[in-house]
Image 1 (cartoon, rainbow, N blue to C red):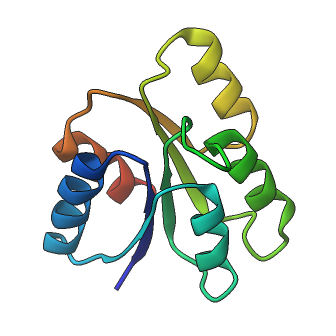
Image 2 (image 1 turned 135 degrees about the vertical axis):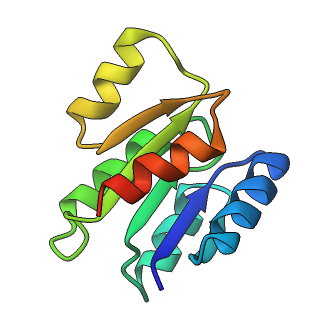
Length: 119
């Protein structure tokens, strides 16, 4: 079973994504900010991390930077899922090492398809 961490501070987004990924056979872990993502990563290596950028405590950019610095996590697929939708934000996210950048609002069906194509 593929493991996914979904990090977002919006409850409705977390609930809809959690439901959709569980329905599609994923083992789902929920984080509300980057510090919670890092806590999960101390004990597990997920197949993919969905990461919002604008979150309290530790934002998505900082979280991605820490993930990419970790030798055992650097190959983990990370997808930014963000309302920041201008070209500079997207370019920055991809340059930092994100495998994909999806802007809100998004289609869960297309997001799921994009993730499946990564494997």
